[in-house]
Length: 424
Image (tube, rainbow, N blue to C red; front, top):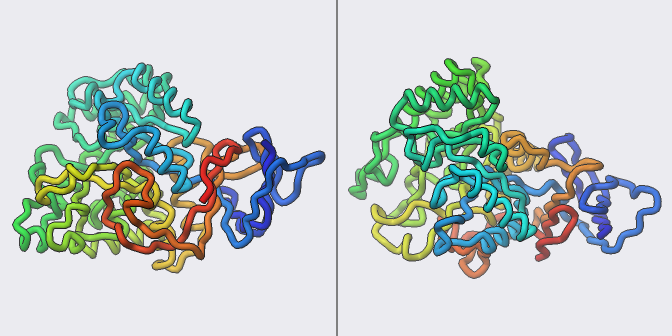
């Protein structure tokens, strides 16, 4: 179908464009920006007056819960949530059941996602077999099956020699390794940041050192091996300082932060609010403020949803027993806009953190709009509001710390390869 998106404010951070412009789409690709190509006749016109027309969002951490955890969410439900959130590209962590350590599992996931004809899926393969941290996975075969990087998800490798070999092998072939900084066996029994709030509530703590000790190890091994490293879900000011120093040194390292840690701190736990039981834990207000500033300054490369749907049975428990996680796909854009408003940032800079920057970390051509590019488009109303309610969330997981809030921005339409997949 040929589509004409008219009268919108066109923003493409990849090409530093922010101006009024029409968009013309045919055969799933962008065929014109500003003016239509010769002979173009639209079969459908979308009026984007007062709206922003930007690249479809790219999320670096979205657990779709398949295979193995279909009771928490299904591929269908989470793809619908992605469309409602304007997210057209998703990186999938490997901690499924079984983990994404075999080419057949990766191929099945990619096939299922393609058949649903919604968001593009980018699987992140298991760095070690079954994420056990003992034997390296068959990385080359997993790349052939569709994996874009390798990770241990939330399961750290206890044996430093195994991690060294994994980074060495990945560096040999140019594979990027995504690691969440968690020190093995240190603070593993904790459920909240080791600070005043945890002490007052009697909750076992996870010290900041659990993050920094892991980062010291990762950075030193990256220095030795030349591995391409992506640090996922930074949570502390101290961890941020280590990553900042590694970047200044010239190491090939990137990092992201989740929407939860960008806006919340351990104070939000209040009186045992299980919605705030997250991994990594919410840290101090000082840490939150440092992460907000670093994302604005570019020291943190990207913002992600860390979408981890949890059912009511997993949340309606005492805080220490509740399952860690929160839904986030539909909140990525509104919470990014809220952060941008708080920092007084231009809209193009806000969108850069959720479009082209994460796309480059994945190694994808997503997150940009240019003639000949895939027509993955998000249209949103910057003056609208997103009210976070259980009924409004399309994800099967209805639990989030932001329930009941009115957030800035409202997604009006999402296009994937030139097809309208969501319309408000």
